[in-house]
Image (tube, rainbow, N blue to C red; front, side):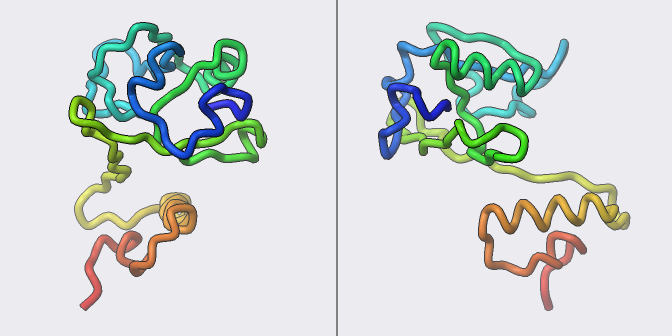
Length: 143
């Protein structure tokens, strides 16, 4: 969300806190599956939803309408500037799905390209994972 959003100063945000604000949801195109959604709670009903298909529109609507998205929280200041923050989502009994699994798919017995390897390294660096980054690159567990 935008740093100027009324909820931006909270240490965490519950689903009920978000009700007055529009939810910005990335549209994957016709026939897209909710299994590939870019947000948590993608099957929930929202009082106000705006479907978007590009990052620039999302950023503008976050500022102009105090919109939000329930995404991974990975924010690239180089692309988005420093005006956006991630506030942790607080799960509740009605909305327990507060964890997002981020992954990748490769063909069996095919090594990741150098760009793919760089992507995994950057994800691990960002998330500060402590396990072996070579495992993700090779797709093998350490012996």
